[in-house]
Length: 86
Image (cartoon, rainbow, N blue to C red; front, side, top):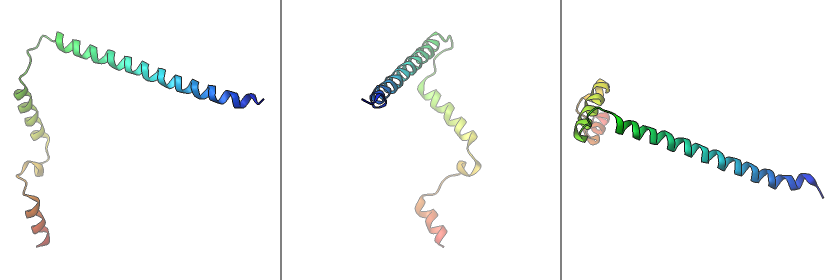
């Protein structure tokens, strides 16, 4: 009986079990972090913002950060293609 061949399946099971345990620990850490973030948000004394207000604020930020060409009115693709051909 070869002792090397009998250790391979055990090693494979051990590696698989180790990987599952590592994933379980990562999931617990992620869950814990998420719960802390939610609780911090609940405990935040600042007033909540309306969804529409948040969308307006981020639209203004995106517009301010957009390159100048992106801020101009875009033409439909068909007009752009005709100009390139002409």
